[in-house]
Amino acid sequence: MTASNNGKHSNSLPITIDEIQYTHDLLNAILADELPMKLEDIMELDEQIIAEMTASLGVLCWFLGHDNQQFKQNMMNIEEALGNAGITFEIIPNE
Image (spheres, one colour):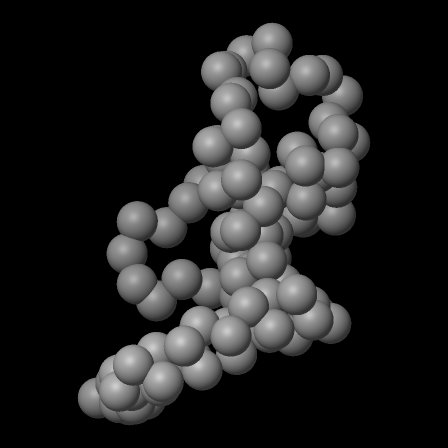
C-alpha cells in the first residue's frame, strides 16, 4: 500500500486528491489481496460487495488518470446506448 491518511476521512466536499488516492490504494490492496490479513476475517464480503469495490476502483482509476480502457469503453457503450434512445447528458460546470 502506498497511501495513508491515518484513518481521517473528510465528510465534506471538496474531497482532496490525497483522499481519492488513499481510497484507490486501499481498494486496490483489498482486491489484489495485499493486506496483511484476510478482509473476510473482519467483515463479510460477498460477490456484490466485491463487484461494487471493483467498479469503484475503475472510476477512481479513471479520475486519477490511470490507463483504464475497460472503464472508458463501458462509458462509451453506455453513452452510445443512451444516445440511441434519445437521451443525452451535458456537463454543467459547478459554480
